[in-house]
Structures are given as structure tokens and as C-alpha cells.
Amino acid sequence: MKNKIGVHALVWVGGWSETESERAIAATAACGYDLIEVPLLDPGAVDPEVTARQLESHGIEATTSLGLSFDTDISSTDPDAVARGEALLNDALSVARDMGSKYLGGVLFSALNKYPAPATAEGRRNSIEVLARLAEKAKASGITLGLEAVNRYESNLINTGAQAADFIKETGSDNIKVHLDSYHMNIEEGDLAASIKACGDMLGYFHVGESHRGYLGTGTVDFRTIFRNLADIGFTGTITFESFSSAVVDPNLSTALAVWRNLWSDGEDLARHAKSFMDSELYAATQRV
Ligand code: MN
Image 1 (cartoon, rainbow, N blue to C red):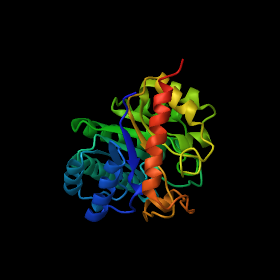
Image 2: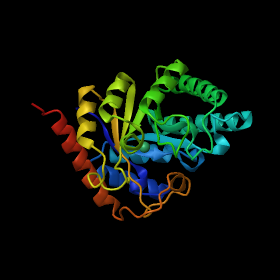
Image 3: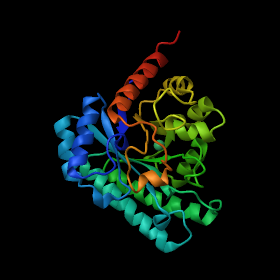
Image 4: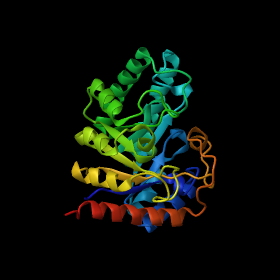
């Protein structure tokens, strides 16, 4: 398998100042990763030219991700919130393009938050329309969008890979892909293998996270089944390690993800172990007899 292997920036830093991005990018390269995933919840806080220069000097790439808020929820029935969300997504797309990223994923379709009620048909339609327009703009820059199926406490719209695939088909866009995350799958999918196989060619990006989002192999996620099935569908997309601890805090992201506990303190030890764990599982997945 020739997948690019990445690590989420929150393993290193909680913000993206010039000093923080330099530290995160240098550490990612030093641990042997191909890329770093940069959060764009607040696109204005990221200087894409500075990031592009730092990426080049350390010889790695970047992907980007975000989750919307209730104030910028494109699955809302409030036209003002939908408009604010579309503006934010367009800003994030520009920042992604200017730092050289070819991928913008995450909870692009709704707020990254616990909803008090189910999604509405009108809100779902709003989200589909905005994302179809965003995908057109993304295509002009060679950027793929990814819709991340997340657990029920982080969205009411897309909780499974099958829901993501159905939603994407309705956009009619060919540069929107399914983004799966083993942490969320462990909560919402009935069958890890069947979920990956059902996504097939529509799967574009994969987050590797433990059941508690800490050290890989110390929780309950069945990674053997996951990596075998990624190999079986011939998945060539990016695989990114995602982990969160109260030791590294992004004021926007950490509360939305309910990161209350200290799962680790040493990001470098965590990232080195994760790289070795993923390399080993990927290799084993292709050596079966
Ligand atoms: Mn994820």
C-alpha cells in the first residue's frame, strides 16, 4: 500500500502562529510522516504563505480540515447562518489552496456539536446545495473535499459512511469523498469491514484514532480488521493519525471534541509510536497468505 501517512496538528500545537506551525511541521517531518493535517476552524488565523514556506523547507505536505459551528451551520434552516457558513468554507478553501493543500475535509456539512434535535430535510438540502457550489470552486484548484462521518454527539446529519456516501451522491459532485475515522466508526458502525467495503471507491481519506483518542493499541478499536479492509478495497488515499489530549488545547476544537482528559503528555512519543503502529499494520495487511 502506497498511502501517504499524516498526523493531525493537535498532536503538537493548539494554535497556528508562525512559531507554532514551524514547531509542528518540523516535528511531523522528524517523525517520518508525509504530511500534517492543519485545522482551519478559524481560517483567518492561518497565514498560508508562511505555512507553505515551512512545509517546503521541511519537505512535507499538508491537508486541511474543519468543523462548522452553530453560527456557521450550513445545515441550518436560518439563511443567515447558511450564508455565514458558506463564506467560512470559501475562506477555508482559499487558505487551503494557498498553502498548497489538495484536501479539505471534516465536518463541512453541519456544526461540529451536539444537536438537540434530528436534522431537517430543509437543512440537509441547504447543506447539499452549499457543498455542491464549494466543490465546483475546489475543483478549479485541484482540491478534493471530504465529508467525515462523526459520532452522534458531534453532528446529527452524517454519522456513518453509508450516510456520507448517500449525501455525496445527492450533491452530484465527483470531487467530494467519504472521510472515515476509526474512532467514530467504533461508536456508530455495526460492521467495520462492511462499512469500508460499502464506501469502496468513494472513500477518500481515513483518520486513525483509538476509542479514547489516545495511544493506538491501548483501546478497543479493531485496527487489524480496519487495515485489512482498507487493503482489500485497494485504498490509496491519505491515512492520518488523530489524537487529542488536554495537554494540547485549541480553544475552538478541544471543547467541540470534548477533550477533557489527559490521554498523553509527550506528543513526540505518541506520534513516533503511531507511525510505527500504522506502518506495521499496513505492511501486515498486504502480507496475508
Ligand atoms: Mn477525525
